[in-house]
Amino acid sequence: MRFVHTADWQIGMQAAQAGARAEEVRQARFAAAARVVELANERGADFLVLAGDTFEDGAVDPLLVRRVVDLLSRASCPVFVLPGNHDPLGPGSVFRHAAWREAAPKVRVFETPAPVEAAGAVLLPCPTEARTSMEDPTARIPARHGDARIRIGVAHGSLRDHGFEVKPDDFPITSGAPMRADVDYLALGHWHSTLVEPGPDRARLAYPGTPEPTGFGEKDSGHALVVTIDGPGRPARVEGVDTAELTWTARDETIARDEDVAALRAAIDAIPNPGRTLLRLRIRGVASPAAAEALDAVEEVAAARFLLARVERDEVLPQPRDAASWTAAVPDGVARTVVERLLALAADDQEPRRRRVAARALAHLVATARRMSS
Ligand SMILES: [Mn+2]
Image (cartoon, rainbow, N blue to C red; front, side, top):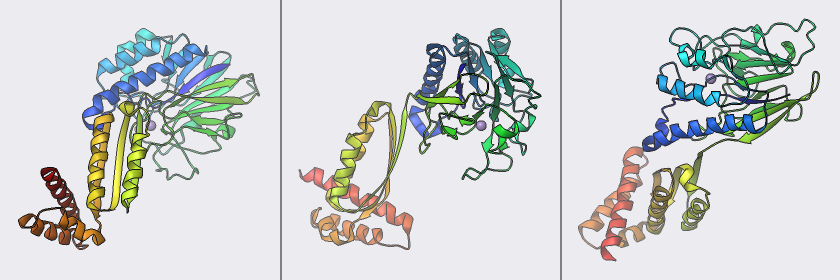
């Protein structure tokens, strides 16, 4: 038996971090979702299961609900959709949309914890009815009672005892849940990073993670899982498949010497597919006038090539031992007086905000002076 396990599509997400590119980011979520459905078709999956948070919230445009149901209907196998904490059951739920009734029984929403048979296995859903809960959703999985079929739990929540801080009302799931509920595989959703435990050759539980990254700093997202179980009592084997449309890259850099800026420029030049990449670059440190100019070029290259570039360099201060080269970079007279004043402000530890503004103004002034003299 083989199925595709996905979760956290978050369709309707605002993508505020992407600024002017937010619409492209929202479209990319659909492209990744379509890839998941194609994956199920290509691998001849017996079914496709979505373990919650298909939608960002209950207020998404009904047109998006229709588009998602249409997309799920393109699967050549049955599709099971679990309500998550972003899209719980209840008043105003996205699952009240008429499209779900029209697409049934091929596309089926888990509206109750009642077991459902699929491909000879029994699916044990734990649908969500609220945004938060102190209860372990897998506690609702009924006992096996001698049933010899493969048992697959489907739930949405946070695994406890896993090195991350889990809020007590974030649907806490104990790591022993697969054993306690006596399931062969627990298909989870909620976390955006892929996690397969204890390992891909004998998985007892897994988060597929979101098929399309949702922001900067998200680790190991952009996958769906193909799960194979050869028969009752056999281990679940899990294969992660890349589904992401866009890459979100966040880099934190510290510069001290001109060579550091050259290395940073080389690293930026080496990033593949910049047109499909959102880049956030946070730079701190000290710069000579030449390094500040090279940083201007880094910023321009990033803006020109990447789908989105957010370069934050407010923490780059003038190199104190280079005071003479900063003043020498502008002609004698009022400009040099301004440079001296800005250097003093940029060295003032007591006023961090003013210090950053002065450093940036200094870099601008020197760059302008260089352009005018060349
Ligand atoms: Mn969630």
